[in-house]
Image (cartoon, helix red, strand yellow):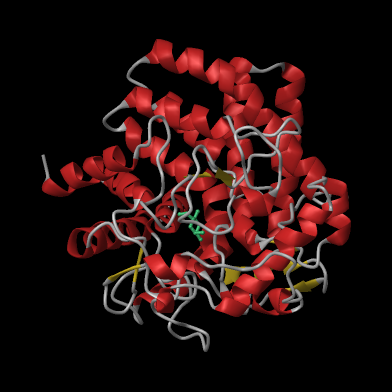
Length: 418
Ligand code: GLC
């Protein structure tokens, strides 16, 4: 076996805390929502029961209204801020009160499609399907109350791309005062230069305070939200997840549920089309408070490919955009391209390459019939990991690893690539 596969498997085993996998030791000592979806797919390549356990333990955090929290605090740890006391959500097990990109239904569909143990997969999927349906209904009800076809995020952490420059203008409107005392722990674990700034944390926590004061009630949060964005990435991921959930509904759901999911999936795809930005040669997010398109190029802008939501001309235009970015970097796909005035090669979502995003973009190009670009992205991801290790992300210019080390989702993606 290739030594990197052995290392990737060892990372998942080491980060397994007994049924759930932490993203990395110390920096992220709990279970994270979209990390776990990717990690479950990685587990399946060598330990199928562990893959299903990962999904089930994430669902232990699901709320009665269907919301799937971004963090499940299975055990206490003083290594992370903000912990359960700051969120104050009163769920058992304790959770955060916001969500993250809904990759889970797509991960479960893949676990079923690739299952070796078909009986196990059948039994698990039948029990999990209603939970996924409840989650997608929550997105539609809580985050698209006016039924526009686009769901909104109320906190940059929900996008999974915490400090993306796409949020700069919308996020600058968020006040910096907090009722919670901000005691960052992240910068004692990794280089502060790879992390968001202190002022970003003031705003992140202002939003947590605001929603906690709204009792984590979706309607009150929607009204109170000083940050409300139709993120292109979340919408593409959810549109794809709806299509994958429809496949599950054929086996485990009713005809009425199939019709409901198909209707949402179709409406989302149409709405995503409105996010096309010809000047960028990419899709982009929409700031719902300013009612303005966010004209900032980031790797999220390729993700409608992953939802089959781009037409042929858009696919060609995104191909040209990718080629232009490739000429500027050593490793594709930078989260923000070097040509951007706000590019920072190692600061989190403002430049670094993320393996999970690459995997979805490559899948999208492949689905659109562009196998060449799909392969370029996959090969770049594989060689970045082989050369620099299983970092949280990679500097697109030098290829060095950034953020935390021995990272679970980077290991999981490597396992999916080999
Ligand atoms: C950071 C990332 C987010 C990820 C989490 C755990 O907050 O921005 O996408 O889920 O770390 O890895």
